[in-house]
Image (cartoon, rainbow, N blue to C red; front, side, top):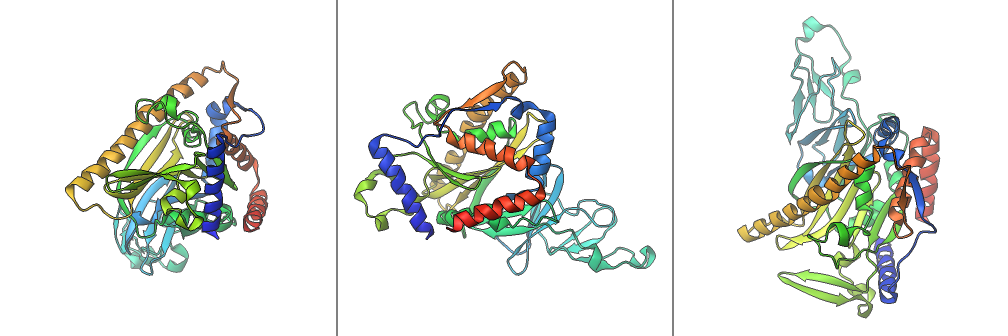
Length: 409
């Protein structure tokens, strides 16, 4: 069924490419400039979106082995992810239940975590197994003092967690069936080649760029080229979106040779897997996934975006994942060159522009920004941000139950 949906999207792109058309939004949409600069709104978004909705917190290949862990902070919430003995993933509040000190930092492999303040010890499944000087401390119920658990979900080689331990929102419902399509990337079993973190502008300013092909031949003229495509069709699954160029052609990369394929001439069963996942796949509110070819094989850059401490700041971790770990010196060099190129594009072009844009908007002299009919991805994104920021917890359940039913039809 997922392949059928992917083929239908591909045929949509081929038909529009052959006709030299694209799908347009109904109208030009205006978004208040204050949506990017208002500090009170920024804090509300952090609370009602990033601390309430499921977030893609790691690719599975970042925690491939039992005992692997990663500690991170998201909008003031300390999170600990662990790969447990049975292969499942645990997501915990990274705070010792004695005084709240984090029990882990960075990443590594460990079966237990010992708090560096008083020495309380927890298993990597969150259970409290040791109270230092227990006789002196006094009787406590260790089962009631385990690390606090967050809802967690692993699918399509990606890991989601919700930073609200009391959330009743199903992560699967939230994804609206999108994770079934993401399985087409075949990330299960892939390897994490490299990662880094970049400083960016306001989180919505940064995310706008992932949903926008319109800027590609202008902003990226020196990197991608001025003849690069600037059109995209958008496919929505609840708040999550895939955008891809309407074209009847695709490039098949094989070794050192690039071959142009006429997709109209191929039967459905002949469409290669890399063609079915072309374009940019976004997971609301903060993930972008794009395929690349480097190091002699398929790869992808997964960009994980979070708000910073201030309204004009964000940070993005870029994960470069590959189908297999490159073995030869030439392939390792090629993979690094591809990843380094993507850093230049995002840091020196996208995010540098976004920072200048945000600084200008903070003058308060421009009341609205525009999203054209050819920028439907940005329109949909901002509509969902506003809707979910203002929704109650009960309304969230209703919204995604309805989206899940629609996705199943």
